[in-house]
Image (cartoon, rainbow, N blue to C red; front, side):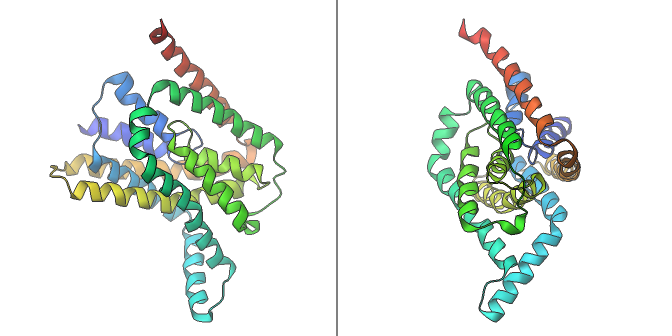
Length: 269
């Protein structure tokens, strides 16, 4: 993979990782439409770490508060709101990790097909629009409880299907539970940290057990591009939803889903 391909794929990853439009769907396009080779495990680690660093920096105040809350909890032997939120994020991650480990091979073989991506892009895009339309949008993130955490965590597990969008389905679940758009997005971004960290750790372990020559220059380019684009997307997304809601992304998903259906039609003849 040359530096141009690395930059483009990292840019796609960075832009789509936190937007409710599915990074997995968009990352299929370079290979399906342009015939580019699979980026490999080392590249996956680089773009995931870039995205992870971006969301950590953006949410640093929340993360520092949770770390201090956990320390205070350990000292006082009682839970506080910040420590509770940290524990909720761990619990919310468990369903996706559990089903991901069990279904990983099956999904790779049976679900990474264009028609699956087209269906999930349309269905879950419309569901996001419905949730944004019907939501009471009255709860802030401080209202998060264990029941809501489990619901949103189970919703995140659905994102194992390519085209669903991890951020999209978690925001959809939070909106349906009555959270504001900003609270839904912020909790979704916080949820991404343990899941991206877990995925990166798993890929790194697989990489360490294989004898692969690592192309460090494309990896460094991918890390930087993914980091910058992801941070900018989070920054802009929070401002867009406060003014326009989720509808620009719903409309985009509908157009994208219909476009994918159009690509599939010639194969049905």
